Length: 79
Image 1 (cartoon, rainbow, N blue to C red):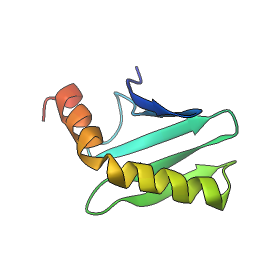
Image 2 (tube, helix red, strand yellow):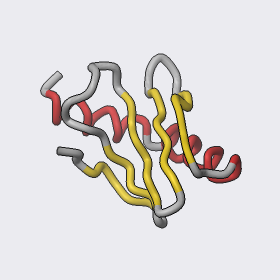
Image 3 (cartoon, one colour):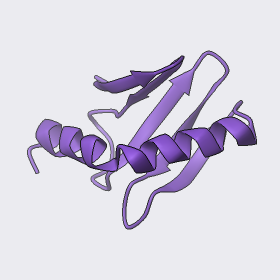
Image 4 (cartoon, helix red, strand yellow):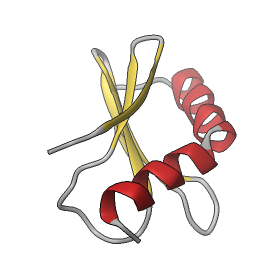
């Protein structure tokens, strides 16, 4: 199961239900994907197929919506 937190343009922001406990978010689009750690600061964990421009844009979105992402994570995992 991979609940979608939100969508932005062609990007889907989500997480997998059976992953590690450290808060993070996955982002996918037709061209590629990325994973961002949320703690202690927002940081790119890995990516494939995305340009530096897209990665900067995505990191900005993740930073702007950090509390929304963390709230969705905690609600799903009941932490």
